[in-house]
Image (cartoon, rainbow, N blue to C red; front, side):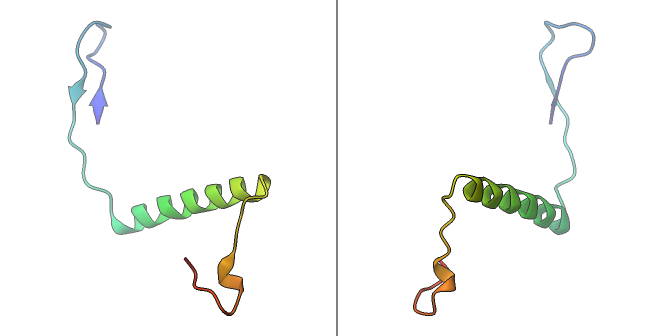
Length: 59
């Protein structure tokens, strides 16, 4: 993560290493992304669900 250089607005940002995300954190973030994309597609009448047909695959 990059952090501002303190009080001086002209100071370059500093890189601060963080722990990598855990699998459950990644899964939670992906769940939120999927929910938001599905909501967006539904609002704009663009959600196509081919998996509801017995003859098609989920992709």
